[in-house]
Length: 101
Image 1 (cartoon, rainbow, N blue to C red):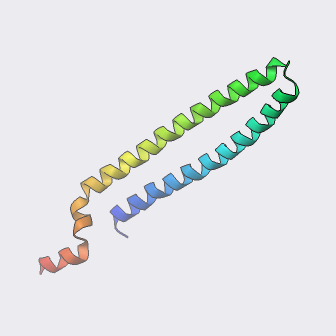
Image 2: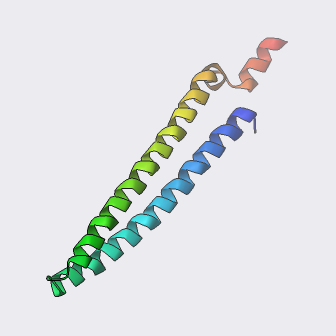
Image 3: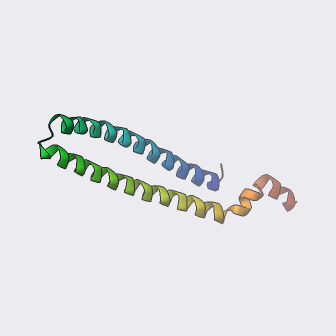
């Protein structure tokens, strides 16, 4: 693999890792939110459950915000790498080497 291919694969791999972590966090969030919501329905007079649900939603919002910023940075880096190496992508080395002789 060329250095360009290696960099693209590395960034793509980082993106997949971030996506996997985010899906696990999201499923855990929804399970926890469902449990707390059922407690709120069961005990409507306890304000602690409502407060906990609000804090849980705020925490999840911040996690999603950080995740989207990381994802934006990964795509910006990928875009930069592709733009800098666009000629190499259009005409791979095997076609360029025939011009050298």
